[in-house]
Structures are given as C-alpha cells and as structure tokens.
Image 1 (cartoon, rainbow, N blue to C red):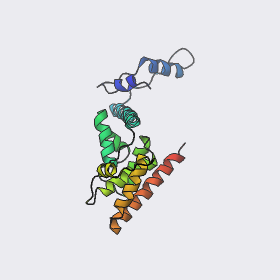
Image 2 (cartoon, rainbow, N blue to C red):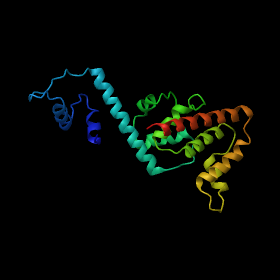
Image 3 (cartoon, one colour):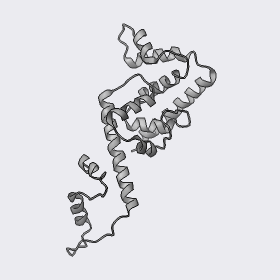
Length: 201
C-alpha cells in the first residue's frame, strides 16, 4: 500500500482509493458482468482499519529514522522516545499494539513486549541488550554512560558497541544481587523474544 493511501485513511471519512475499488469489483464479479454488492462496513470496523494503517505507517517512519540514526548509547526507553520525537508519530497506538503500558518501566515481566517492538524497529539483539544494560546502570549512582564512554574510549580498534560492553561490565560489578538477578532475567526474556521473532516465517 502506498503512503498516500495511509494518509487518506486518516481522514474523517475514509474513501477507498479507486485502484482498490476497481480490483475488488473485478475479483467479486458474479460472472455475468454484474459486481456482487456488499453492505457498507461499520464505523467500528472503519476505525480499526484506520488505526491499523496509522500504526503501520508509524512503524515504517520509526524504522526509517532508526536506520538513519543507528546506535546511540542511551537506555532503550530514551532511544525509542527519541525516535518518536524526531518523527512526530503518535506512539500510544504503537505501544498498545505491542501490549506495552509504560515504555519507561522495563522489567523482566515487560521485557518481551519491548523486545518485540525493538525487533520490529530492526534494532539488533546486541544493541537492544546494551540499551537495556544502560537503563539498569542508570538505576545506581553512576556517571552517565555516554560520559563514561567518552572518558574511557580506548585508542585501539574497538567498536562503539565493544566499548559500551566493556564499560557496562565494569559498572555492573557495583550491582547488588537483586538488581543483577533482575538484569539477567530481563536479558533472558529479551533473547527469548528475539528467538521467537527469528523463527516466525
């Protein structure tokens, strides 16, 4: 479906594009040159269609911006909220589509839903795990990870992801047992969600 068609569906009264109307008439011709007539869909059905189209368009815009920006060493919530702000999309319907109540509240219980959203945005498993670990580091009295990354950047050939992982490993040594266990459970749920996503046709 073209982007213009998505935009048309956001109008108060949706009128199907002519190409769709023509295609349906061709498919549902009764064989005698007369098209089968169907009753008009309910307003509730129209609203669900509009919402589904808006979510699809929002996801496409978020994916495009994600591709343009790439990895940034901030928490997952900050990263997705940043994508939302620069694209101007309405995030509520997107979060509802993935069963997410509060993107800022990441726990092992909500991890799979957030992981499915991240995967749909084409964020790699390695990157999303780093985003999540950054969010956990922010729960302790630690300097911001971007600042630590700038301060400890090595002169060697290590990538930004490798630098982040090294810094996070050091910071996580300060975690108490409860916080570390919650991080590990959250990581487990995220890996499981990505595995499920990869196995879907």
